[in-house]
Structures are given as C-alpha cells and as structure tokens.
Length: 486
Image (cartoon, rainbow, N blue to C red):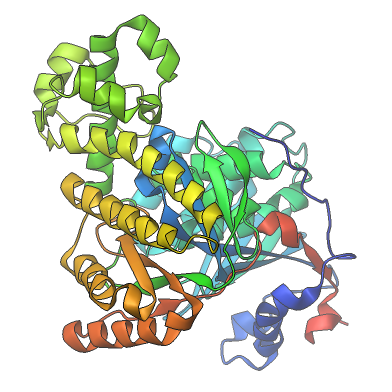
C-alpha cells in the first residue's frame, strides 16, 4: 500500500465546516427527552470528533475483490463519531438512529482476556444479538486495536462513543464503511495506536469480514478514508494501491439514485458471486499452469480479456456445484468465503465479470480525461456503465428496481444530458450511479420522481461530495463548546 500519513490531530488546522451538522446534534443533546443522552458525556474530558463520508461506486464495484481498478466518489453525506475518555474500563456506545437511540456497553477486560477475547467468540456473540449488529462494527475495531494493531495499548482506558450518521443504511452507499472509518479514526487516537490511512482502512475491512461476517472488498474503506472532494479515487485493489485522483470535468456530474431495494453486503447473493469468482480463478490457474498463476498474482483482473477469449473461454463451466468443485480443487484461496458443497455457483459469469470490468474501468478513466474536449467520449462512457450493469445482472446481482432506473436514464438519453447508468457496490438493489451533465440535475430528479411514483419506494438522489477522513482529520473540543461540562 502507498503510505499517506494521518495527522495525529487536525483540530488546530482543519476547518470545523465539515463537522457542523454533527456539532448541532451534539448541542441539541442537552434538551433531549432521553436522560441517558442528556448525560451521556460526563466530567471534563474533551471530545475527539471524527467524520467519514459515504461513497458512490462509479465504476469497478464487486471487481475490487478480484484486484480490479475502481473509480469511487466520496459523497457529501457522512458518519460522525464523538469519543470521550472515561474512568470506567468500559466501551460505552450509543448510536443516534432514525428509530431512536441504541445503547451498547462492554467491559474492556471481556475483550482483552475474557469471554470475547477471540474474534470467533466476538463474531458468535453478535450473530446471536442481531439487534445490536451496528455495535459489532465498533467493538470489532476495539478488539482489533487490542489484539492486532502494531502497537496495542498496554493499559487501555475506557471510553464513551456517540455515533450519528446521515449516510442512509442499506442503499449501497457504504454506510458500514463510513461507520467503521469514523469510529476507528477516533478509537486509534484514544488508544494511541496510530495507523496510516491505508492500514486503518485495511483494519476496518478485516473487522467487517471476520467479526461482522461480510466478505467485502477494500474499495469502500479506502474511499471513506482517502477520498477527496469532487475527485474520483483511482484505486487498484492489489491489494489497495492509490493510483491518483481524477477530477470530474467541468459541466459533468455523477448522480446516485436510490432504488429503495435494501442492499446488504452480507447477503447470500453477494457472497455466492464472490465465492464463484475465486472458484473460477482456481480453475483458470490450474488450466494455465504455474507461470500464468505467478503472473496473475492471485487476481482475476490480471487475466486480460484477450487471453481469456483465446485460451480459457472453454475451460469454465457456467454453473458448478460446490461439491463437484471441492472434489477436484479442494477449495479456494479466499479467506473471507468458503465453498458450500450444497450450493450451485455462477462460476462463468462471476469469473468473466472482473476480467472485463477491469478493462472497462481502465477505458472509462481514459475517456474521463478526454472530457470536455471530446464530447463523444461521454457517449462511450455511458455504454461502458451499461455494460457493467448488464454484467452484474449476468452474475445474479441485478434487481428489477435498478434495471428500471437504468432504463429510465437510457430513455432520457444524451439529448437530456444523461449518458448511462449502472448498479453499484454489492448489487442486488441499492443505488444506481448515473453519469450526465450538471444541467441534467432536474432531469435526474424527474427520473427519481417517476420511479418513486411507479414503485412506491426509493427515489432519493445523492449529489455532492466531501473529503475522506484522512483529509478532514480529527477535531478536539471541550464539552463547553457543545453546551455541556463546566
């Protein structure tokens, strides 16, 4: 990974602008009807306040776990965390959620030496307490700092952590990664185990995979950490190399449109397709031999479309039962999934997708650089997005709602300033990314309204951008600044 040092404390240099929405919520706590919220922060210890944005997956999506290039835009919506040191050796959490405040507390000793000292025990605990699923992300991060960080704290103290977010859940705009990154930025400061942004992002991914149980790729955590306002993060996921930032050209914009169909990276469809891709890699690598496997370095994205078409197109079965695969190949190299002998996997489409998606993203990035000097580049970019969308569908990760939104964007067409659209992230619902001109904003709102009238759901439009957590840094405030304390 490339190294980008994270400032130990950006409070003295960073503007408070990005924290203002959260500060208003903190100040409103003193009038809250819930006594536990009015008195959540105690004593005189200051607050460490952090922020991480959601993200719009412009191109790349599920190909991230296969080493592809991805292009990701950090959104204006964000998750915020406020941490205060406390004398009790507890982690005391509260999440200000739409349905009301949710509280959780655990002793540090339980995580260090007690019943929850192993990742397996922690994962099993939260699997049995699904209503506290949000807390698994945060407590998993604490567990990581205590056991897996390069400099684990010797004598850790407890803390109180309050979370608020305007990143909507289940819409495919990375609410989980925003939660992880915002919380981890505060927790590492508290424990004194500072990490570079890349290491922090990888730690958050590890927690989501091994504690929460979601076999996610790395692009979400990296975007929430290293994203830049109005720039596409150009990330090669091998495992996480930042190749640069691509400006959105003047006059053009990427829009997100919510389908209203809840997306979850823990869903069986996403896990099935990821497993199928690693099964496909294993089959191709065995057919190609050791030299090709060494050249590919374990990533399907390093298999070129030309090589696949010439040498391997006839090697892959379209679908393959888990038992048949295990009988011949024993397993895959993926540590986040396992092959179920009773399941049938879409090996062919799941393997082809990252091979061709990597090529599509490379071409898309090249065309983006040609705008606005060459207007016809936008037309080809739109076609690439639609091809990506159709490939998702071939893998089994499409949905009627997202198909309808893509069709509405295509029907509006270049004449109304819209060039193409695609499903995003883990697929199976969630948000559609659309590419058009800035002047097409009203047309996008019309499409969203039409879709909402047809289906009775979704229709929220995501626009705007903001920096990742590494650029914003941390804000340190005395309680008096939010109307509490002495």
